[in-house]
Length: 460
Image 1 (tube, rainbow, N blue to C red):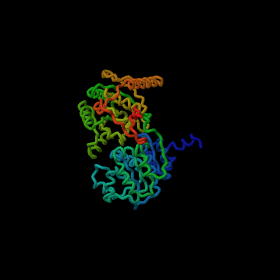
Image 2 (spheres, rainbow, N blue to C red; image 1 turned 60 degrees about the vertical axis):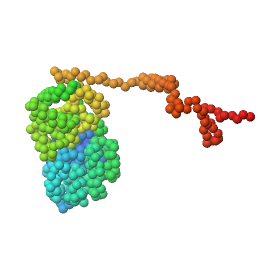
Image 3 (tube, rainbow, N blue to C red; image 1 turned 180 degrees about the horizontal axis):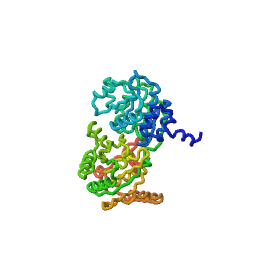
Image 4 (spheres, rainbow, N blue to C red; image 1 turned 60 degrees about the horizontal axis):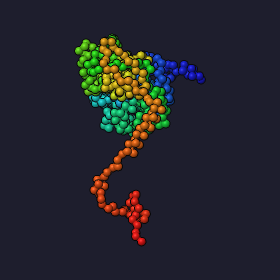
């Protein structure tokens, strides 16, 4: 079979031989062509293989593991069984995103799902667990609590998924994950998804979870998304940044935008400032309770507000269709944080734009992020708001000849310094000036031999 023929056969979801209710749900959700990660993951997952997969954010991996699980549940119904699939995710936001995907593609099936996350009332979760939904989507800490109290049961578990395993390790959730895996039946299908499979700790988690896994790596975790344009604007100070942000948002009228800050306090201040300038916005950060988070995300999703100001709590697990602009009011702390922020736009094949406002103290960090990710950053100038700060010139790597010359010079200078250096004077030496030195015994001869001196000779 030629590569062209194979590609033609997998250019839609019908080629996966999915159940009719799933195909109707996929069409209703607006999915037409499988993404690369879906095309790579779904066939072996339908065969029951354990998988570990790395793919860029926004690549469609949620549907890649949900669809084969739902298909296999439909093929083997067990109405009297307990929950048969568990998806572990690092954050509440990601849990509800996965649940939304399930509701979208499973709308014509009779399958049920529930989210078990920290911050929601326990009594509601207990009631949901008693109904034995086929699929549970949970954060590790809260789900482990339900396991330890006997409110959750994994006796009938057939599918276990770890999504964003690297993020779980960053958040210190490894012990909770191991405790849950140890309570799961050994006869199960397991899948692990991560932005990178080489992050420290991920191989250990994979060995604990998976049996003879198939490894799928589609994109290097540092790869920038091809549908996202990356720009930067120089800024002098926070006041200048506020003016630049206002201009960017007013020029991008009727465009859904995400504004990221590095702190919760910064997010609140920016939202208050934009409200004073008559820009309708909402704020999302880690101190909000779950009810307020849902309200804020509902306003943003239905278009009641076009601008969402967020701390990094929203950089992962936030999937809002139609986000066309991401603004980094503060340069992210790392390249991975930049990648996850910018990944909120340019989704589902749409073009996206990420603009970073860079001040003098942030210049080196921004340069480091660009090198780390291999980004081509285009400078943008907002006329009338040009910065006094011009940035530092690009550092060029020295040639091999210059580097060798420099190294030789340094070695020579070091040698000269050693040659001309005065011998060290020790306090005990200064105290013994003028005193006779006694010879010391050597193990070899037992005679006194002082370094640099011959032993005294006896007279004949």
